[in-house]
Image (cartoon, rainbow, N blue to C red; front, top):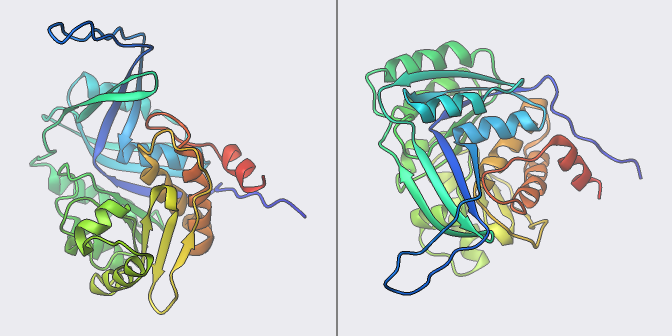
Length: 313
């Protein structure tokens, strides 16, 4: 059988959303000498990665697709670090510097186990929100896929306005949602909540039939073209109007860390659609990519070679 190799050359995706700096502090071991003594944690490795929407842009770039990212960044040391991390041949960062601190998350790990996460954040609220919108308007005509990466940090304050604009230009809108207000995402082409986010909206689903029924109802209520519910070890389920749900089983039994897996999923789907693959093909590639990235520790990406190797294994 001839191997099928996917590629995303000459495809490009516009990403708009909340930029985050993800930091990982690694320790080989930690000690708790007694209840009265502060735990000792010798840090022997520090790693910094693009997070949030920045991780989406890097995921897209690392599989060979070009991406442009628009968003806010703080006028601080963390902002400079994040800019450097986005210095990629296939990433065009169009960032707006504001007085806010760059949102930073520090995860402390010992023997590959997460001990604690420290969040340094204040929402990206700026008088430059109209400037952000102008950048989006100027950029949209050069792209045929838009990804909105919403981490509820303030960048997508006018998300309904952005959705309406992209719809008028017939540009597919893919959204990774957050929070309990999904009404603001109505009219999107594809929404990609994880199961926990999905259940916050539709209620607890104890059976497969409930997921299918509530998924189709949410698709209808929000006037979506498609809904993809990512379900960790249980794979992903795709809902489309007037079609039966399609389930994509998990491709890996090894789960080291699911951090950023949702970013990988939406990135591969966006790149695939931009290249001209069908939504079903795109979701299949994304399920394989997610199976690879959850085997890695931290906010990681996969390469096109890793994806093609897995697809042809």
